[in-house]
Amino acid sequence: MAFKDYYKILGVDKNATPDAIKKAYRKLAVQYHPDKTKNDKRAEEKFKEVNEAHDVLSDPEKRKRYDEFGENWEHFQHSGEAGPTGRSRKQQTGNRGGSFTFDATDFENDERMEDLLRHFFGGQFGGARQGGRASGGRSYGAIDGNDLEAEIQITLEEAFAGSARMIDLGTEKHRLTLKRGVRDGQQFRLRGKGQPGRNGGKNGDLLVHIRIAPHPRYTREGINLHCRHHVDLITAVLGGKTRVHTLHGDKMATLQPGTQNGASLRMRGLGMPDYDHPDTSGDLYLDIQVDIPRQLSPEERDLFNKLADLKHHHRHAENL
Image 1 (cartoon, rainbow, N blue to C red):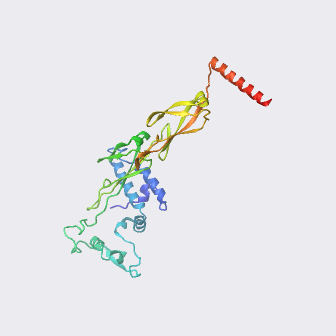
Image 2 (tube, helix red, strand yellow):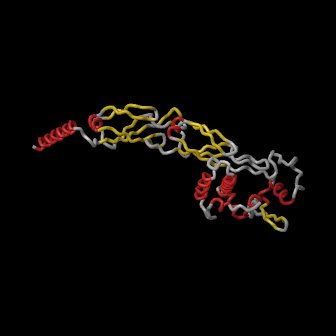
Image 3 (cartoon, helix red, strand yellow):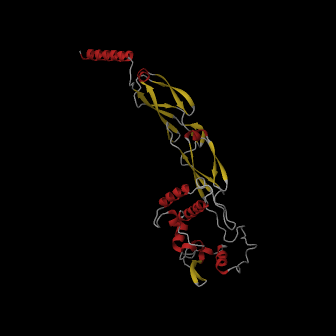
């Protein structure tokens, strides 16, 4: 098997931070995801390579072995570590002219020792197992499948009401049901829906990340919602009722006389459902925007002039 340069696959250097690796992986996973590259075998293979590279480089222990041993990293354990007695016990064995070193304390009373010897010397180390399987039911050299990651985008209305999504991985589809109040960035794990294991290994998982699209009217803060609400000048000055469009339907709100531009009006229980407590909802906050009329009829202008004269008269009287 040709050596795979996982750093090159993800497009990062060998000193890349975990965050840089994660960012590069997510970008490539979206680019080559089967949902976007249907029936493209080359993209499908690239998607698998990207997931394989991320599985190794995102795990500090796997990455350390990969950096140290390269293509044979899966067959080696760390050497030089102290055993239970505080002494390091190293063994060496040949492999077609080459050699490797491992710490024997890593394998005491462990079936992995037999796997290691079987890998390098063939099938003569077989007394404790039968039928090609370990006593625990796993095949020799069982390798668990890699996890896969997917991202789905939903609207705020879908997050409010709950929804279902079909996730198409190209070869199979999975249904994900989202409860009311799902949050942006929330992650769901579909166990066993990732890449298949090899030689009897377990299937990986499918990790689904939720993204909620920006809304033209509402912004979300936890389970609370904010929105800009326009009211006319007369209602702001005199007070009164105003109709509000909410995710719970149209509601009426009451403004106090003299409501100022930029004031905030709280409407209890009209926010988002709490995902963890479905019977609880947040609040809706109206950020009041007072609309100043741009065009006036002759009658309206005359009334505003009379109001201005009246206000001027009152100020003059107060200064006497």
